[in-house]
Image (cartoon, rainbow, N blue to C red; front, side):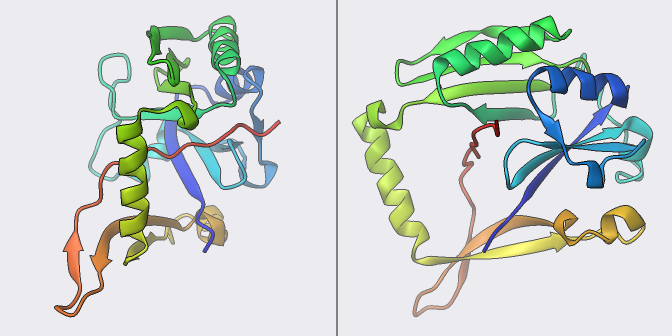
Length: 204
């Protein structure tokens, strides 16, 4: 099964935001880009939908967009190919008008930095050498992989029929994992999912 992820972020000035991320090396899918939104391509299956604040608010009736200069609702982490690529992205982000959010975090096997874009959203490019990860973490990773093989995933799909441009595109149906159901003799039991970071490499 192929699952695509669309991270939706509100922006104050769509044109300037596209210029900012274009300077970082990101491209955009013109099929889903207009005056209200831009579909930024992170990888083949991962995208960031940059929506004007007015358009973004149409998806959250009764709620307000948080002030990103004072509050943080999400951190978008991107796995890159090397430490040099992490430093390069930070340099490009600052040159394009963003700012470095915090000092580099260096754990030896994992290295990460963070920048704030021109809309106040925080992005965390990082590099992880899993072959050099602590042995305890490797063991935990193998155990988790083994447990997942015994489970089946339960998905909830959301559609937006009130927005023709999105409803017409099946790829804009968002699937979220609600829980894992253990298949055993006692019947299916819902269990909470651990927080697992999603990583990807940037497309050239």
